Image (cartoon, rainbow, N blue to C red):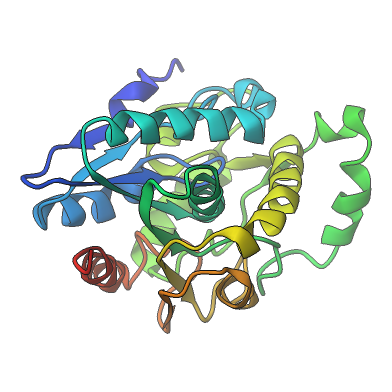
Length: 278
């Protein structure tokens, strides 16, 4: 089945003030995972932009081609666009997007007004990950295998919300790697290509070097029970970033996808409280 135009799932919500927020979804994800937060921020008066990342929400073959550099350049351009219109621009991201927000703050140190880091993912060490993950670390060093292997997303899909999890599970369990449909635009890719995991690995090596040089105000939100990336990720970021204004809020009733999970309202409220300080 042909997919609809992915661009329609990007969103730009114009606010009534002089502050804007760039939201960045996760790798293999979709702007849909940021839409609830985006609407809440916009209702609070903020202009919000969230675009589909390069090669995302289309075919699996396209997704495998994306590099972290392409994503970084794309997000930098979105930031410059907002900065040309608004004096204060904040950057918020989920998972890999959380790291991209830190990376952009490093690239534009005097221009980013603040960072909202949602479930930052520096290393995959969550309780739901397969114990054989170390084998993947060996395989991805072999380009031929790296470009062929796709990891099917597995339970609990980053969600503690059982009703939402069941909806996503119905799609993910029946999805074919050779034929996508429009639900990819809603739920993200049902497969995580090893090629994307490798790009994420390369990107984290870069960001870890940049974190000690970033001084922008930052809010970090992370679920205590994150199934994909443990709370250690949040503490690593908190303890190594040079920001004087830094806060970590732990969530007690969510898994990895905190922007759409059971505490999504708290995530939005804390983000607004942070933004309103500046």
